[in-house]
Image (tube, rainbow, N blue to C red; front, side, top):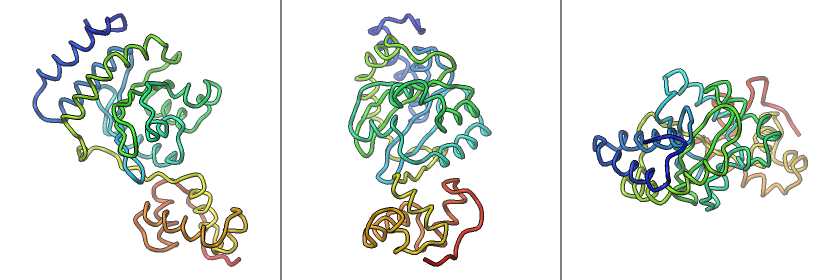
Length: 258
């Protein structure tokens, strides 16, 4: 009975039945939940996002998953790992199912964003809907994607209908340690990215503070946060790691004075 016209209560029954019938391994049950959400919203692929203090972990679930797509998704996510109006709402505690188009302030803004262009390139989708099941710093959300028109109010109503059941099941599974196929993404703030770029250009703390409009002490605080998120201990290693993960373009950097 799965499909776009499924009544909400039937979707909940279908979800619980499928998860109960799935193999006991957490991977299989997460796959089962994602597959039902894909069917309910007539989507083609699904993701699970698990928040962490310094970023988030992403895993592809259900249809459309391949080793090549998983690798390319890793590259796209790392390149666009800065602030995200879509996921940041879940981190802030908002549990309202929504779409990327709505979160970005409309299709015109979303369609030209780096994440939308990356999604088209990797998955062939340009619309994404999110079902958050736990908010806060360690948020958990399921995402579904498809190509074409944005998800409708009816689609979001279906996601809201199964949200309590999905949240309850995820709470029982408690996926604090996601399977190894997940992708770790360090999330830098807009100001941290600005400081990192100035650092890569070879500027010292005084010059970075002048250009960024903050004190030298604040610059050092941002640098400490950057080093922690990138798991490095010095400026050269930070620049190299950022280039390796796509946060910075490869090119000449360091040293420069001033």
